[in-house]
Length: 262
Image (cartoon, rainbow, N blue to C red; front, side):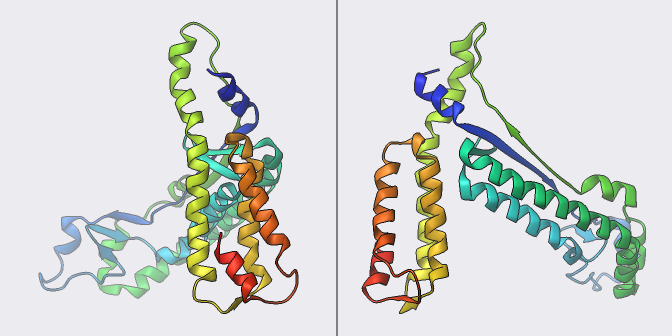
């Protein structure tokens, strides 16, 4: 590995997320349809594209929200890397606290879901009495559902291989690390474009809260500027622009134009 690659790995941890959400779906079998007329199809909220729901899947949405929150926490400070996120050592502690909080909330929501699971099945049967035979034969046991729902995360120190065939074995890792710089700017550009479209364009004025996204992007660049020297001047430019903006009240007129120039 090059000195630059080793230096980068010394300044980051690889954070990997492992959220698992039960689908609450089973394959729609031929026998599910043998008791009904050919013209009598199951309702769309029960079955679609060859699968059927065992419960109302809205009951599982809380896990999807927690999953997205975990990814947002990592994306705010890190860059996509090896199936996870490369996060600066200066920020990983802060991210870890948020992920621990999410893990605790996930455990609570899982316990609540399991406690109410049979009730959710009964409600679904009551909502689809004509298709009870289709649902009853495919109900997943509570134990299997418990195994299918979970959230864990880990932070890993990535190191180069120093033994035999090190040059060959480290080649792929070196390519991954060298791509972090491009990935950083790609992610910043995508987030900035999304912010511009949703927050600034077409507005006569915006609130101070609207600048929070800018500050988050600025902090991400600052914490990961060791990936590319070009990040530092960009951070300085954002800092200068922010210094010209009012710190209270709405942002409008020339100040808003300055924001849009990012």
